[in-house]
Image (tube, rainbow, N blue to C red; front, side, top):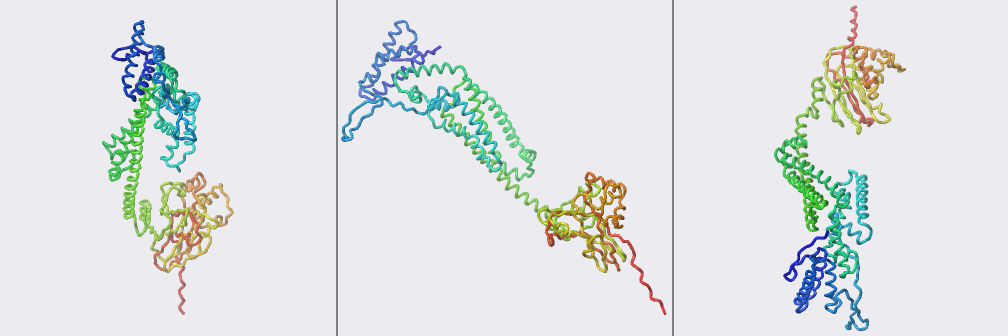
Length: 603
């Protein structure tokens, strides 16, 4: 059913169809634009309009209530086209120039040039009409162009997501991901939209004449009637925008909640959500974060408004945004997005600088309170050294001096001397002092170690003992240096303690005579309690933790003195093999008295 409108022509009212009005308006505007340029042309145009009004009166006299497009076409034929009224060809004409006489011009008419012009199709659009315009200009169906664009966008996004790595900056990844959409938006911004029947004819490459105009006006009105029922693409866009609007609404509410919470309690939010406990850091990032929140809410709000408007217009409840409105909202959104990214980067930079400065100050304060005898001690290490009477004589290439978790019995709370570095060799020396009386002594300790490289077993890791008026001699295994016992490199499994207990339990065999025939080793192992022996055999899933007993025997002290003993690692100075060591249960014990000197017999 066609819509009728009331027009005022020469102070008379007429009912006319909408498509008939479009054709009549174009006809009268063409005549008026031409005659207004001529002297006395205004009166001519008014006379023609008066003639049209008279013909309309005749139609009303015949009982016709509403003027149709057929009536208007008949009236135009009666009055004549502009060319017929003026006796001139006002279309596109070309004047041929004589190649021998440039000043002589001969008028000659040519056919109108019907070259196509690219427009956005306003009558068949879902968003901006770019793809519908492509279908009119390049050929093909509008549905095909839209389906192809959706498919290309999905494939392009999938390829970019799959190829994205953290080596790329996000600010470069996002434009690449949305390149098809960005291209669509740019085309929508800079391509004109069809507003008149002439634009639609030029978009299709057809001649602008009354017959084509009449046909196009009818087509436009037909499309208007059809657009009253939502199309597939309108429904698709509406559903898509509903989902996007829902997500944006949730995001907006969440962002608004965080923003209000930060304004109300910035210290609480920073401490509980961003793990920032320092009020100085929170105070310095407050302004960038507030500005960042405003820009984020603005950008989400703009997208939410546009999506809601798209939903409403997709189902025909309101008109679509004009090009000017789209460009305005796009510019505002881009400005808010740039503001958000810039303020976020500024907040991160301020946080990083302030946090780094405070961490340096806190670390320096920690260093000052944890430096003892020229070495920086963690709290657990210093407590262990103080409790057990150890002194750190030398340490390099290690950030720890003790450890726990792999004690021979599997007890996770027992702490022991320990250092590790797999990049460079460790230098380490820990000592203990003990006053002793004359006699024969033995130093024993439970140790383990591991190093990298072909000559790892030749690395210099020792337990040692030294003192005045003492004679050191005899030791387990390689008697390389007096008062030293080398630490074997067996890693974090088995060890001679576990192996001796395994032999006694019948679960391990060894051909090493040092294990079978060394009474001191068996004595040291058999001192362990029954429960400790059982725990050692079960530790590390029955594989042991690599602990071995080493000892320095027959330490002869001839007079009261102070013996110094401990562990010494000099891998960096000899064979540079990085690795680790552990040592515990040092015991300096008297094992005999000095032999009595024979008294010379008196003669």
